[in-house]
Image: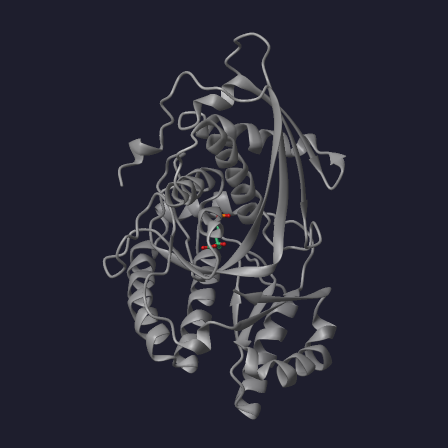
Length: 355
Ligand code: PMV
């Protein structure tokens, strides 16, 4: 599919002057991490990534639109987060709308009010850009659907993912449930740098019902934004090796997902998580997202796994918090252990599922 097909070309359209659309979108956690993008505003990743969408963690967004009375060709935006006006969100949203207006020129004919909330606590340290940007992209596509009655579901989702990517790279994976791939990889048919696709191959049943327990170690917003971290990969001493290793890990994961080897799966995702943080620690400028309690949790997981032989592994996001992944069959014992042995290291525990 050529990206030109995403440009909305119809100059004349009819739509009610005022209206609204609402969509929800889930957050996701990457198993193979996207870290590094081309030094342009178009969010093209330097390696392919794969994530699970997360069940209880989502953003709901209502996009209210009013058509300009006279031809104006520019939009205005007001944004409310959990009922309160949030002018601090405006620069990012304006930037996003400007980027996507090339593909959705009708946006220029409206004034917008965005009302949005998350089901997870704001400033809990969970990245909200994936679910918020994808929810907004889905809302924009709902407007486009009103303009093009013949719009097909497959195109709707692809373009939503394409637009979400322009807001935040990882957001393009949040359009689909389950395992989702973004970024061209030679072994994954249909994978590309412009929009995400559902993982197209066989998945062993053990990977279809995973529990994701999120340990919130630090609730404060990160000091170093991921957008800055990505760009540091352009001059990173170990970048080439990192991209090679991410590609190789994707090949390994394809066969692991098919065979159902949970130990191999767990070791691969832990390796990926630690590699992401190693890249951060060795960039220039270097920085550190882990906190002492991140290490305490990791060490406890390793000790518990050795003693109990349970299938519990961790992954990390761009921050201090820890995501624990384990099969649903082992939930009872593992969750009991988490609350008894890990609670003291955390500010909060959030229970979720990969779905
Ligand atoms: O989507 P961004 O630009 O916030 O980057 C996300 C990067 C990681 O969360 C660290 C990895 C990933 O693939 O989600």
